[in-house]
Image (tube, rainbow over all chains, first blue to last red; front, side, top):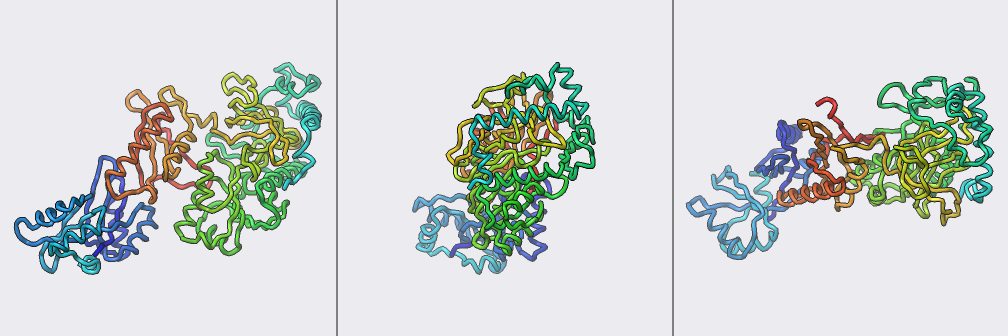
Length: 143
Length: 433
């Protein structure tokens, strides 16, 4: 149920993102989803890729600082209030979300939301109890 | 183990008698043979015959780096060129390099003095010692090389640079002792852990010199490489490595080879002598150098002296780790700061690697200090909140240590170049902006 995400420290200056994504592209790493959190000085680039071990190695060799984090990928029903029902399920159990970002699944055209949650097992349990579908790691890497 | 018990464990009175005899001889020799010294001594109104007690060294004029530059290339030579057998130079950042010569006896003395601190650091003929100092005009490589051979260690003269090859050599030969600068030691420590070969190397000891470093950096290197790390000190002008070194048992100050070097601590501004225990600039008079003897050479290194004999049995005065250099000192908005202060503060903040850069520039008419701190994998968090907290913690700590406001920039590891020789920690753009 858990998906590995790669987070990369990037300085806030032109060309940095191009360098990261370029390095990954050259080594045949495919990016499935991404989000960027930034401040004036630096940003944290979060990526879901098809081959995280390889991606981490490539970035390390280019002397980027990166770390791996467990996240969950949740399928959002394609109807009004779809996302709200998921957040409600987490809120009811007092589960705090560190951050989240969304992308669209190719096969079903459903939205998928990536959640970073401190207590990830509790979150999985709460969502499954409500019948909400959590994507497997394999599904996400091959989206 | 002690390499030269007779000289390293001498009684204070016997040592001082020997020092006085050698000081008189050195002063007489340079007065006779080096026109530069004769002129300086005449100007100061002092003759070699005016030296009666050790403290009379204070009557002699100081020698500074610029004197060595001004006398480039042969001006300070106290022997005919045919008696000199080796040249080393110290690369100056500005102008001409400084050149030093060695006679056959000087080289022998040098190897002996290096053997002393190498032994004090715990290295013996059972060790495989890898030298990662540059071989060439720089004194580091050759000094340690001959000292290690004298001790009987198996020497791997790998020279500086090429981290991959260092790691391969360490694994292939089962290197047990590493010789390099502390910043390169740290770099190798990171490389060993990144490559995941910690259990394939047999390093037990590290001998580090040529750069000021802190005890916290020592702990970091020891932990990363699984070794016992000792500090040693020397400078090309005086002899190269071999002036002093720590003993492995106590690591509490570097034992100075006082039978070869007469040391003083002076106030760098007034040049007045300072008492034991007071921090100031180290001044060295060579007592046995033949080719290029030096009178009261101002090292610009800031340290303090401790005359108490050490528990290891050595009786020589010890100098504490060099705290910085008077010429590394930066004046920012009237405040004196040393890069080493930044280094200690960063190390105190748990998990922060000491890779940093001080960038000085002008903001209008005011000096601005920006400190770049590298974000390593260990301190990196993918949560913004935590990174912002880290940024604040570092900034607060540095501001309180330095006593002035700074700008802090967290940077990628690629931004600060890794040095394989002396680390460059300061970028001063104030002249240009």
